[in-house]
Image (cartoon, rainbow, N blue to C red):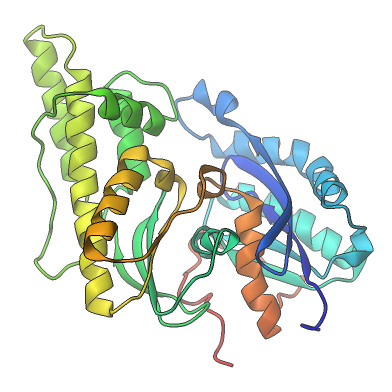
Length: 344
């Protein structure tokens, strides 16, 4: 089976992007369609799960057809159908899973349930080699994690957020500063343009901990905003944005570098939607250059949720012959470690 090219049709509907892609041999993206719902959810100040699910239903069938068409292959040439089974919003996940199961059954092709965070990590495989053992720094709307990988497809969580993830903290701070959803890019832009930074706390936690906590920082930002407004001051937003971003980056970068050294990883991977943050990309690149640590960062279009990354991760299971049955269910809290590829 591995002597032939593998074409995986991948589906991603874990949150508010509907995406379908065809990935060849886990590394070559033949098509990658993304339908964003940002404009729809902007009116509500965040993602409304029921609305997201309905939007997925409206577009998923046409996107699957178009993904195969743009890939330049016929449905019969597909090797497998992959879909995000978790984590994510249960209703949104179900739309993608039902579409993928129906297509896999109709075409008589294997079905591969795929972990969303494994997808973010293996988005790096779409742009270059991954060398093991490595460490992945996952920063997204719902996840901030440090993942050690001793070998391909084997995941060990050594650090995670205890409260807000980085992306959540960015959106909440953006809301406090008066920016619309999604707020992260607005805070990043304002921070990069500011010449001043408001001093804000760093949550290091225990000396040997690789965990993260951003709820205290978020509260400190809200207190600072209220203090400035009570004094009738204006134009403080940029300094707060920069102070907040510097606090986040200092902690995230330092813990990632320390984890690389302690695990003897030979490469650091940056993954997830917040990997598109310019401040974080620049700071991590500079620190890795200084420490002599090889760093991989996907281009912006592979940082946010997309189906190509799901196809890349699903290829790990394809190579190992690990397929899902048609009873596959949505798993909103699916464990990354449990999804690991089995020992050969």
